[in-house]
Length: 218
Image (cartoon, rainbow, N blue to C red; front, side, top):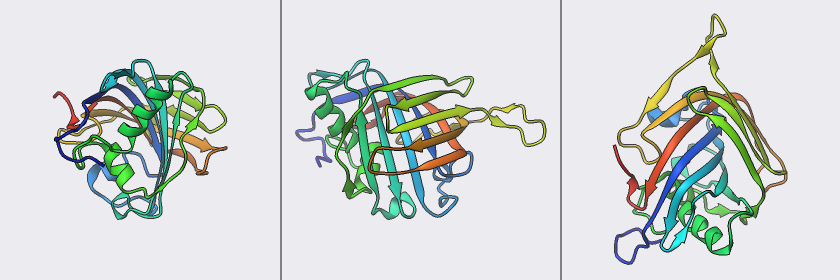
């Protein structure tokens, strides 16, 4: 991987992500705490509104990442598999693979760099249609990766009334997002290399504005 600024290809990605993992609401990782059950599993779907990798445009593309670590992410030995929508051509697939495996990125600058560095077991990238429909403010929506992932999110219920409980996280110095809306997520993976299932666990919807130097903007 190229981890310095010399000869590093310029890239940027703007859009939104929906993430669902196996931990309690809020996700201990966001607070520097060990995972709820000792290990980390997650599915993340990306809706790219605009972006580029060198001269390759990434506008309107969709991708997903499926991840598994036997312990906390920082202890490594993880496995990952990327999925990219068939709407991407070969050059765009190569660009997304580079970005999502931490290439042309300063060390530790993005979650993609960290996930890749902590996942020596990388499975072949799949191509599958990705459909999504979510609303960050309402914390409601769904995403499906044809034959591979189904994810649904709903508001976290108030423990007494059951009414929607709204909470968000601010990460001024995070490597993934600056602001995310917390939700309850349910996911199941089939057909890929990693078989995961979550039921009413941590989910979030966040705006992305990433470059090879990390999160851009305030």
